[in-house]
Amino acid sequence: MSEPTLTYGRYLKVPELLSLQSCLSTPPHHDEALFIIIHQVYELWFKLVLHEVDSAVELLGADRVEEATRLLRRVVEIQQLLVHQVRILETMRPQDFLGFRYHLNPASGFQSVQFRELEFALGMKDAAVLAAIRCLPEEEQRLRGRLASPSLPDSVDGLLVRRGFAKQPVPEPGPDGRSQPEDWRLAALVKIYESPDAHQDLSALCEVLVDIDEALAHWRAHHVQMVERMIGAKRGTGGSDGVGYLRATLPKRAFPDLWRVRTHIGQEPT
Ligand code: HEM
Image: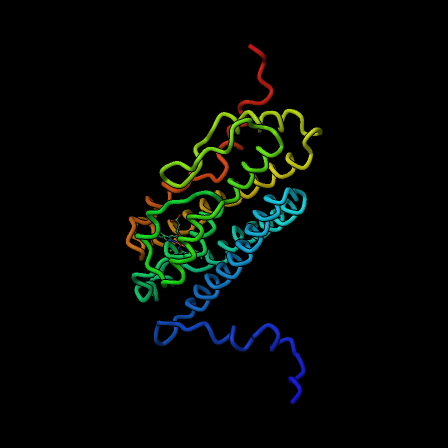
């Protein structure tokens, strides 16, 4: 028997996709559909972002810098969309959210495994997250895998070493699983930023990494602002103190040395 002719809906599994939005409020609150769909869309984009970041790590490991940079540019474009999407949620009024919020307890975006995977993939590894979030065994497995695997900053370090920027090997990760900021890396970045023509591929890579860090910072800032607009100083459904907790995450950076280098370039010799 021959396979049924491929259609748009069969290829993309549209019927299955459209069957995945189940409201908990009864009768369904008008805005719960928005709330569910926006989170599902975020998770789909997170899946693609992880796919691209994983490929970029592999490409950098194979010294294919320009190809990696191209994929990371795609990540930045997706991130811009993710930042902008917060605006759609802001069309919901706080009283609308209260109409179904209590059904969500104790679930929260805090438990987004893919968001944590992304943080880990970008080098912001925190083993304590494993104990703090409730997730499926296979999700925990994925998180543990990411904790143990090289992150994007690790692969950039490896690349810099292979390009001869550091005589010593990449330092061992610190106790929290992250490589410690090292002077050799900052020195390498100063050279790249002061002579971009001599290091064109690395220079383009560094700027796209800054774009990724900046876009994530924008998302965090916009999310916390939206949360304050929605719930004020109420506690989060995930159990944190809400806006106060989220504000404390704002300084997180994946590539702190790429921010520090701005201060160090163009210095007068002493
Ligand atoms: C009405 C909409 C939303 C509200 C009121 C809200 C509120 C919160 C609150 C209060 C937290 C802190 C943890 C807690 O105690 O629950 C949090 C964390 C988080 N939310 Fe949302 N959120 C909303 C929409 C979203 C959306 C659309 C996403 C997209 C995936 C998202 C992703 C996250 C993530 C990833 C965290 C963890 C942040 C971190 O720990 O750095 N949230 N949210």
